[in-house]
Structures are given as structure tokens and as C-alpha cells.
Length: 431
Image (tube, rainbow, N blue to C red; front, side, top):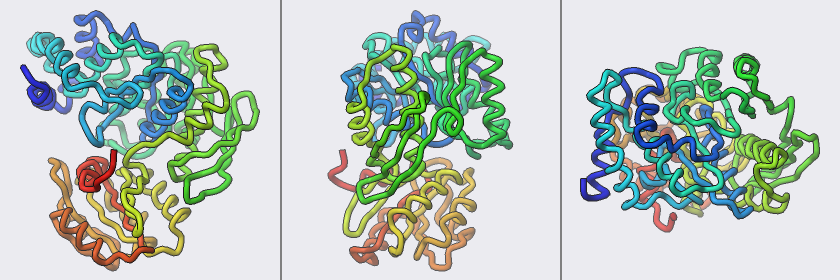
């Protein structure tokens, strides 16, 4: 392994899913590499949707206050390295290569044991912990990859756990009911470590509360311990009032659009309030406001072109599409909306399309270069839209739609984070 590309090829060549669920492989690797996870101060976040945006609000606020912030997120949108970043700057290619070389012999040794070969996600989790232990940022925010209980990030003992929300996704792995999915997400709650959640479904909250009680962890719930009140949507974003854990009101503005983003920002505010109250960090109100407004997460109702507006959004499950529809209705009422849609074949894409049915003027279906991508024809065959076309080449589909748009029309590109990651590259002038 001599180059960055060698390292990436090796990492991507590892298993996608482990033969046995559990944390044993990650724990084995961490023990062999000096337990780097014990040397970092972190916050852990799980949830079906909203994790990445909440991480971004927290990063932006802490950066604004002068702190160095490590983040571990997935999937990546632009480069693989962005999954492991400090102050939004991804790990350097050379550094990733060095850490890959460091863990490779241990990975090979582990593969020979009864635990079996580690997965790609397990290895990148270990690399991130080695990197953050060496760099020592003031805080690291860890986002789970899938679920929580058996997620490879669940080897950390954070100073605070967050659960953004719970919806139906990855049911084959996490369970079919709200309670089963909540049980997996609540698996990140550690003994004596407080948990804050913006989950609102009663049946899910009961599961989270029960787990928090069992772990002797303080719990703070949206609607019970803190609240958000959306004031208005405008061209530049959303205005809202946050009522905090101490019941004081705080007016704030965010530039990321959507009422669901207000909830994500509210969760981040509750986390910041808790961490400052407990004396972990010092952040004044002005820095919090600036940090919130400056937060920007690629692929979340992101405008990639204007007149006509072209929006890309990573919604890839029913809950995400509901939030997208609400945001379109709030910001583009009475506009003609075109849709370019692609999805993975194992997602509930029929429900996703149905959610958008009454607001879309014309839909285009396409596919993209990914093993589980549904075909354009398959999507169109199950489409509820009266006006629709399909083209397996997304570049051609995009050009066809652009020819139809006038300056007041809007094009929404959505259905899969992997899809928008691929299509985003075709829009120039994006960082």
C-alpha cells in the first residue's frame, strides 16, 4: 500500500456488512491500536434523518466560539475523506494512507480469528478514532452509520448522546416497528450519560425513556424540556424561537431551509445549552446565533443553480420526503415544480413518490452508477405522476428538463443521497 488510491481501494474492498452484528471486531482493533477512543471528548448522535444537519449546526456553533471540532459523518457527498474532518476540513490523503497502513496488519490478523473480517465502516471508524486521538480537537461529534446499538461508533463513551428523530428506514436490519427501531437508536445511551432527543412519537419516546432510566441517564425531550416555535420562512431561510432547558426564550435564524431544519437546530441548541451549563464549554449567545446562521450542509435543500432554481435534496425515505414536500410548499408555493428522481431498489420509493404526487408538474425518472439503484423504467412503471418520462442516463434527463424550464420554474433532484452525490458534481462553482 503506497498511495492514497491504494488505501481507498483496500478500504472499499472490505466487507460492506459484517457476518456477525456487534462491536467485538471494532473493540478488538481499538485494543490493538492503543484504545484511541478513550482519548477523545465526544458527543454521539443517532437518528433516522437529521443527524448530518444537527452535526453541522453543532460544528458551526463550536467553530464560531473558537473551538476545534472533529466530525465523523456518513455517507460522503463530495470526497471520501470528508467523513473524517476537523473544522470541516477533511483528513489529508497522506494521513488517510498512513492510518490505513497502521491498521492493515491488525485487520489481516483479525480476519484470521473467529470474529472474521471487519467491515469498511468498522475500519474507517477505527481510523477516525486514531486520527482524532492524535489531533486532539476540543470536541468530536460522532454520527452513527446505521441504528445505534450495534453501530461501530457505539464503542465511545460520550459526554452527551443525541437522538434526532425516528422514522421507517433500514427495516430489514433495525426492525419493522417504531419501538424496534427506537430500541436500536436508544442503544447509544450509556450509563450516566445524558440524552437529548427531538423524537416526537410517543411509542418511540417511551422506549428512549425506559433505556435512559435503566442506564441512570438524565433525559431531555423536545416538547417537554425544551421547545421550538417556527415564526416564518423567507428567501434566506427560517426564523424561530427556542425555549431552552432553563425555560428562557432565544430568537434565532437559520439559512438551511425547512421546518425540519428548525427541529435539527433546536436539538443542537439544547445540546449546546446543556454542555455550557455543565461547564464543558463557554459559548456566548452572539456566537450561537452566528454559528446557527452560517451552518451549511451540502445536499440538504441545496440550491445549485438559480433562475430557474435547481434544488438537490438527499431525502431517501418517507420521512425525509415528507420534510422535503413541506419545504417546497413553504418556499415555492404556486411555482411549477419539475422532479428528477432516482432511488435504491430496496427503499420505499413508491411511498416517497406518492408523497410528492400532488405538487409535481412533471417527473423524470433516471438511475445512477450504484449496485442497488432501481432502474428508471422500474420507477416510472410504479409512478403515481400523470406526466412522467424516463431516461437511464441522468445527464441526458437533466438536460431534457432544463430545456423545458422557464426562469420561474423549479427543478427538485432527490431520492437518494448517493444519487445527489453523483449529480452534484455536474454543477460547477460548488465548493
